[in-house]
Length: 322
Image (tube, rainbow, N blue to C red):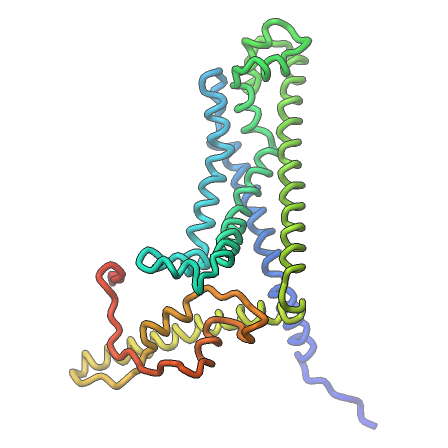
């Protein structure tokens, strides 16, 4: 009996596909890990290069809180700005407010907005946690507070100079003894790290409870929900590839008609109503066995097949060619 022969490279390709599938299945985790590394690197760069605590009562708190909360606010804005779900929900709603709540489903719209805001908060929360665990920004900010309650907390059972020299402690040029200064810095850093770990624990608990509540109230089984998510990913991939291919064909057809000075070949387009319907945000429902607005549209029995032969954008939505 002849031994079974395996083609060279078969095992290698099989292993490569296995590894590729693993990374594709874990791309959310990988993305968040990469975001965490960028956050840690950014915080270290800010601390070492651009952050210089002014060490005076008038500016310490404002300066420290600016470095602590400013990047978090910018990351939150960027998270909203780069959210395709937000723009899919928001585009055109000023002209047609009902797009925000299709079919009067305001609760569904609120859930989508909450999901978008939650996703945009991931990077800011990471920044706050990393910055607080490091403690540099918090030390500067808390040392500039002139509130009697805060000052009495730090300067309790210490010398009389503590109140006047508190703002100079982060810079190392205070008149306090080195032992007293180190104790104050340790108190600052301990409070900062407690706040950082508190935010991490609260975020983890809220994330777990939110996921449990969402899955508990799901109208479909776990496997069907998994299939729906996979379908949405594949549809988006194929939609992007198909639009690139179709746009390329349209550009070639238009340029060929222009340079050859002849009538363009007919090329039908979906009408405006069709684009509006498939652009709506879709929430999977057991009452409708569809997995996206695109599938719901193409399986309609009253579907409008009338093409839009001359698609035109308003001047407000024009795209400048550069």
